[in-house]
Image (tube, rainbow, N blue to C red; front, side, top):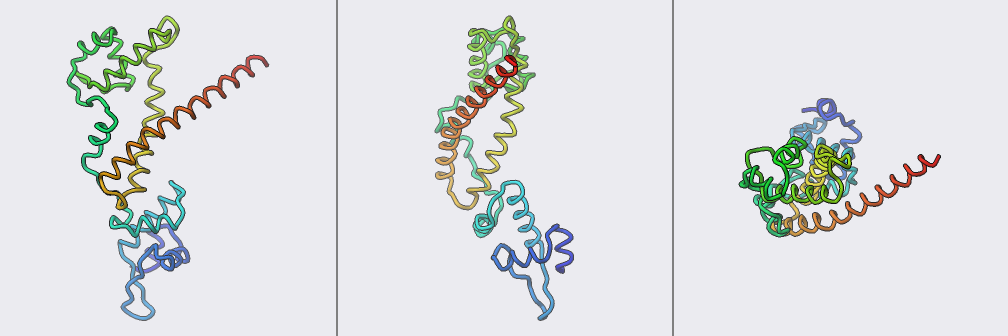
Length: 227
């Protein structure tokens, strides 16, 4: 394709494209004649990667060039079995749904209908059985109820949906960013190490940030109430 077509399809101006070529972010076009330059799908793909990483991730061009120069050329690299490695390293209970819901409710000391409401809220996976990990979530909520976060205090299982709504996009963004940054630069063992450390350390960071935000919001509401 010619430069005009590349501009139209990519949404990137020719001067920027030429700048990227000089920086090594894009390969040189083929030149069948001295004054003729032909661009191909790889130019288009790389421009899409550059725009996405700049606009959505705010990455500097120097790091984007490093990603594009890796063997994966800026594409996601799969790490087969990484989820299992992480679960094992973090001592996470099984995610296989093998505990019948009736038995899970008994083990948690919770009415079956209450457990089903947690499914509806998206806190645990829906189905005739739940996993050991989801059972731990149910037991955690049961402990919260015992401490006063039950229906008599005005707290309901449906309230937990706010955590699912907040954490689902966060988890997606975290994992997508993780894969973007290490694809082509780490082997499975290093990916597992980084993933484990990220879950543990950044989990602590999120807890601290959440605590600060809660305290700030409590102070804000108190000021409003006093005013």
